[in-house]
Length: 262
Image (cartoon, rainbow, N blue to C red; front, side):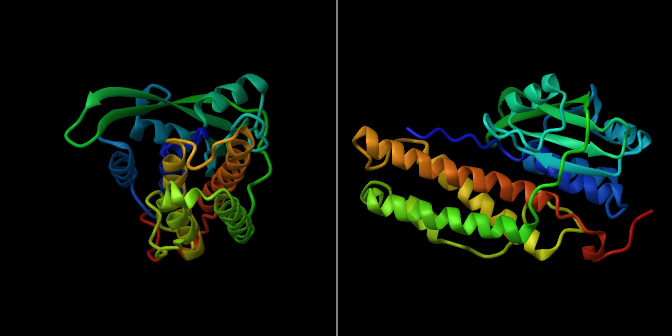
């Protein structure tokens, strides 16, 4: 069975709205509101401080930009080192690189579940601040990530059709074929171009597909069929991760529709 490896975009929301906040397009309360809307109304902290105080400490440390990374075993190219810090980020499956301080910093989240809330599960997210060794090369630009994602969708669709997955889970193929509307991604604040919003919205839909595909082996029966299906879905998962990273790294102040608030 394929196992989904994509976390919820907790660090992505902090990245997307944190970049808008650093540029002065939104206030710190806006960041807190967006984090709570996307993740939940639990307590959210940075380095043991409430989120707003933690953001202020990062600005005081000369933070200039946030970057989302979503590492998995075998693909840690976007991590900044050293190995122990990379290991923490790999265990979390997501992190935020803080560019500007010397040395750069890495925010690694841990999730605390409090039990059922009014709707869903109440989570608190606590980002630890760790010193990083360097600023790694940026992720692929949005057009390259779009191209990779389209290729991965074509390959995955072809494999699932060959395996007759449609007879078991037609909704998987329906999600693969649905480009949907280019609605704004939930984690992107002012300053992100329309192409980044469209890429993130598409990645979100495909993450739902991967979660659905992880429930069983579809119509695959033999070990060879299961292996082909797993390889195809892992390839799609990698493309979706890189799409997340590209979309959240596409911040450009020229795309903001309002002047800075400061």
